[in-house]
Image (cartoon, rainbow, N blue to C red; front, side):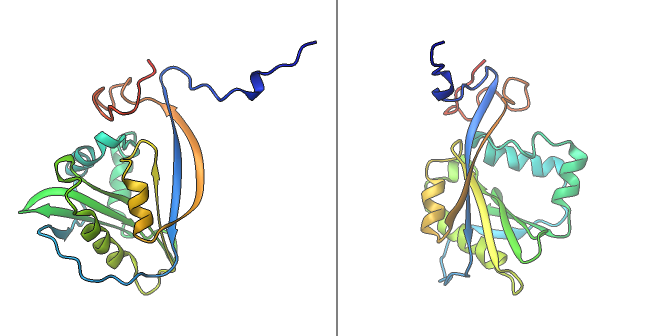
Length: 199
């Protein structure tokens, strides 16, 4: 009987699916948050209406294949974004929504930066450092011992090195695979053009 070498081959991604590698990063000490100025402003968004939240989520996240809130039932989205231990902030540019930050305090002693992003036209203009300083200032409450977040290979290639420059350190990576929501119509086929569609 011959040797089966197929076990040594890389895992094949089935048609209609997307695979990703997720990188988890953490910060265990509050950094020195020196004042960083920006023309942008930050506004607490208490009990955001689901439709408005999802519109901004799509505007920020579609280029980078953000799917989690899109794939949830709307009542589930509402229960999450209006939870008392989740804080959402709109980033505004001259009053217009330009991005958002979502902080999750549901786990005692920890804050997850669940979402952090700007609309495409605002990216690459140096706003990220100001935005992260704002996020960390809000995240590091007196009872917080750990701030963490995650990114994946579908995200902007600038995301991971940016988080590392901000002081986050990798503590875990994992592989995931899911049906491609562009094929089901949950995201437009034009979303995340850097991610191939295996139709």
